[in-house]
Image 1 (spheres, one colour):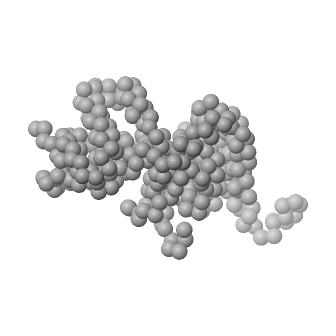
Image 2 (image 1 turned 90 degrees about the horizontal axis):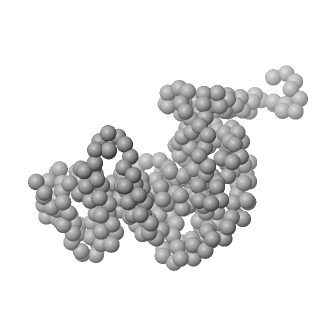
Length: 156
Length: 163
């Protein structure tokens, strides 16, 4: 059954997404399984241009998984890899936005892909460039989940 | 003291081809922000040099980059086999000074020079040699020796009189 689910981006655009594609996102998977997806889902922190890319990635990976025996045997899909490489061939700012979206939507493959690219990017930088470049700043976004460190109050 | 051992080779890094610098102005135009969660994910996939350098960017970055779990991943990434259970290793190494210290004092100096410097072409480091049982045990032994040396009160480093 090819159920489609409506996703609304933060700037109001609506996208129809197949259920299988939407399930690539663990967050959305839980929402769908809990039957909360009937009225459509609004994503307040993802703009439409980023959502387009995310949906493109999910769709490609769902299609690739369905049609490929290689992955079932645990092998590496070279075509998919090169597609992924092309997919992340974008500006750093868009890279970061896609990363953020994949983090909040909990899409493991996309998160891994984009953060690896960003890690490669900062590998070549001196620490002064990281400071000067306004693309890599610590934002004061509240922490989403407990994890590695604790933010001590009073420290920047 | 520890910071210097990581920053030392950096001077050569700063003389890298200017082509990398040219890309910077365009990136500086758009102000994308890297949240803490995301930065942590990014640093998880960074190598040792990048992690050390990230700790020099700002206080916020330092707090993240000095997390022992990141350094544990960096240390154990190239080990063929972890000598004992992960929990046990973690408990022991953390008690003896931590993974960051282990890497900086007892792993980094032993890496082959070609592996320590990234390739000028792609900026990626050469594939690091994998460490077998002997190298791992050597560095862990040195870590514990270093720890116990510091423990001994009034230890004469210069002349080894009575312990």
